[in-house]
Length: 135
Image (cartoon, rainbow, N blue to C red; front, side):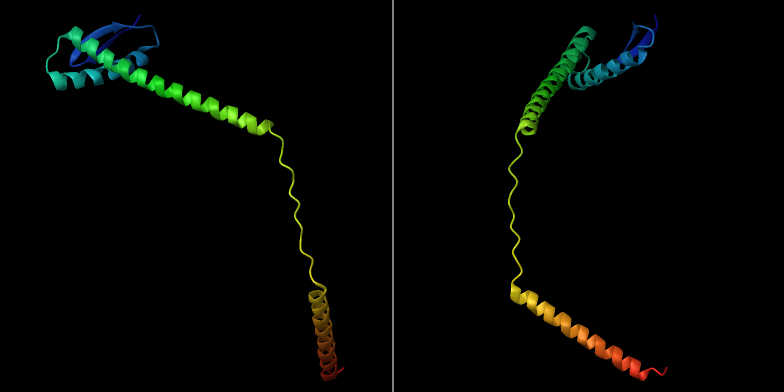
């Protein structure tokens, strides 16, 4: 079983852990040390047991706050899933009937007249172009 040396609040401790779990222990020790440093800065020299107890309680308080936020987040997620399921199971809305306005006959007739004039002009241009071109 590996022995790991950790520092908490300026004090060194030797702690045993399972093989391969050293990084978890060091991570936890860093979090506890952060809280202990705050205590030492605020209160000065604190007895070891009191420092560890208070630092542990501070971490437990932060953990409880995070658990509350996580629980609220999970509840919000579940509520959204219920709404999503309700929307998916709801029947599709009836399709809307859209009417396209009909183009008035006067406009169609005007376009036909313009097309006829354009074709007549094109024919005249072709005739004049042929007359100017030597064979």
